[in-house]
Length: 217
Length: 126
Image (cartoon, rainbow over all chains, first blue to last red; front, top):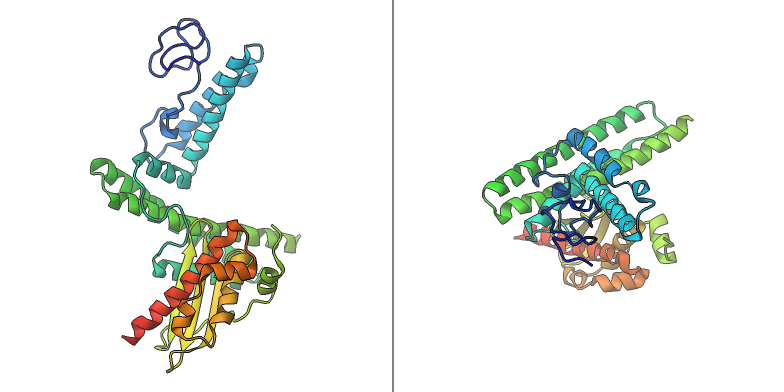
């Protein structure tokens, strides 16, 4: 194993982030400590331009594709696979608002609130609302004519709640960058928790839509 | 996952499902949730003048273990005093239902629901 900063194959000193050795052109192992944002060359932020990300993703996939290293040494094949895997995992995090927000919390290096789950004390009003939404969903009779409309309506309602939570996270992270404080991270952690309930709700809507589809089929 | 018979029994025939008027002074309502899985649980108790729980109702949106845990505690706390109800520990619930380690949090949720319901009831008595 080469020491960090030198090419594992020819020993040449490497610039900070260089996936290929400029001297011998051999693929280097990915930098393990890079976070998902850095992997795609961006500042950690909740607001991510997903469209701008896609070409970078495809480019990286091509550049490191294991097929291109099929005739290379076992070490090079392994490094290419590590790069591809790392790009895949990073984009999965960046594409998903929930994972993205969690990544920002991890990056802050401070642990707050109940984002780890469990039965931490929570806002009873929020839980009450969640319960009411679940009750409304349960009351939808999938054999009724208006079933699809009602499912759409409830789905949109909860989707809007998710958007509002995303807004909260975005604002809290901006504030955090200007003046770091646990309050910001707690707002993010709280929004993550609420998003989890909303996602669970949307899964249930999907499940009922499938049942509805079967019913019609 | 294969559920144990007691869990299945409570899941298929949940006891005391329903709601009470949360604005009544002798009703305590406990709302708890598990953010990790999005489960929500409501446990309500109706307490008489002697401090005994006359009636209990629950509603849970969650997995079979969460439903069974809350259904079981409604059975257990009926006829108990508020203090006796508070002494119920999640381990007793988990043992009774033979919950596997990954489902222990469901029994914790049920224990927390009892506490939350009693808290709400006591606040109303002040």
